[in-house]
Length: 229
Image (cartoon, rainbow, N blue to C red):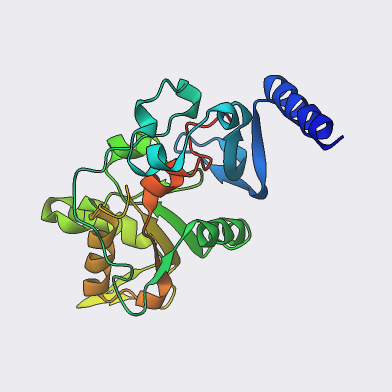
């Protein structure tokens, strides 16, 4: 009886996978945002899972020794990312700058729907942002704050952050709360931007850092700007 039930469930699962191969996990957030070209998009941010990938066998040794990626795996089940550059970042970059994981990012995105004082910033260079990013993130490259030639863009970014220029410095009374990210735990782009803002006097408690960045986001199958929307 039990074997029959298990067989029936396996057949049902395989059939369902063929009919609807991609499903969303229970944990999801509905958001709307304005794209760089001015269009308003609505999207569900979640962890996507292709049920067909469950049918690929593997064992612990293959997984932990890194041989899994070399198997004859269908493209829709592969998630890869280059991580040979950069240096590993600490878990916290500043005592008062909170480090976020994916669940905290989801909470932030949900809160941002009703709170215009929150900003989600992809601090990578434009070509990275245009390749793939997280829906609702705006692109403010870290070079605006690290390259002296970008003073005009830096001032425009500070205005967007709610910072007012005053004689001899800046006024942060209305500074927005910003969540920054870049490519991953090895990426220095968002940390450099946060460090530059700290040097200007930006309140550290109003800055958050998604340490895992795009590497963690994509490896978990989270919705990206490349995902069907």
